[in-house]
Length: 311
Image (cartoon, one colour):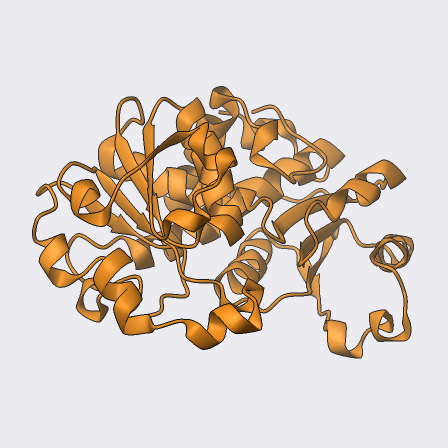
């Protein structure tokens, strides 16, 4: 594996890198352990709400033997006007080896990379930009299901315009040889998506896709007017994966969703735990792919020997 000090975007990953992360994650899933060369400390700085990503990064860090130092933005010096850059300079000076950051600003990480930290940075989501750990866990889930990516038909459906998951996945899936399609409200299908795949209606998509990947509507990023006029029932009927549409999916096809799921909006409630759903498997895979990512950046620092992460 080619280790990196920082992991902030899927643009960093070659196909060989992706497969190395998937193989390492599978090894962790099968019980692999690693040995730290010295006490190692991590902090997860989440400036947006999160359940799955935040918790699974902490689980990954603890499984690898790191000591996790708590951080709450509401009680930090950020409330006094301290910049994100100075916050990270502070925690590095105190002795942190790894910062995992989620922030509402697109590409928040660029000034941090420019600062040249010795500690490592992992991007846990930047605004509507990138979500590399979610993308890799999605790749792991698809790979475990099909054993390859080449030629798979994968639909990404929902609030495309505000989704860092959509942007990360469309790039990585295309690079790996999958055919990407899009669905959802047509006004959210912009030019950046046109370069990666065509738009189809839900009724067109369900008949031929290998993977139906649903996205929630990100109300926190919509205008007040759009939120006031949003009709969940109408959205579900036009753009959602209803039980009737799911019945027309190919028998081998699977349902994915990065969660949280708004049941009855983008996805019928009964489909969340249906046999073709891989939503909770995605969450399980998230722990192991994040272990692989954390182990990679620690190996780059020499805190884990490179031989322990080679694939």
